[in-house]
Image (cartoon, rainbow, N blue to C red; front, side):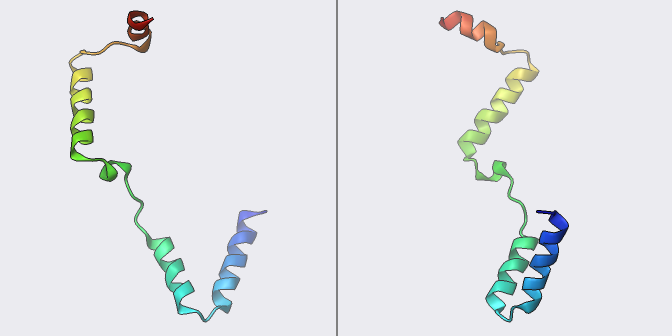
Length: 72
């Protein structure tokens, strides 16, 4: 289905409804701030990621192939 047609149909349905809960739900959906996955992490997870970033900056890491050779 064409996105423009779907938008027109949604607008028509919204115009025809008198249900305030539907109107409120649509407004909340359209104005909802997108959530950043970082905000869902624990402090410990954030610290681990930051430590990993620091190690990469210092060159303290191994690539995947090197790591696999050690464990095969």
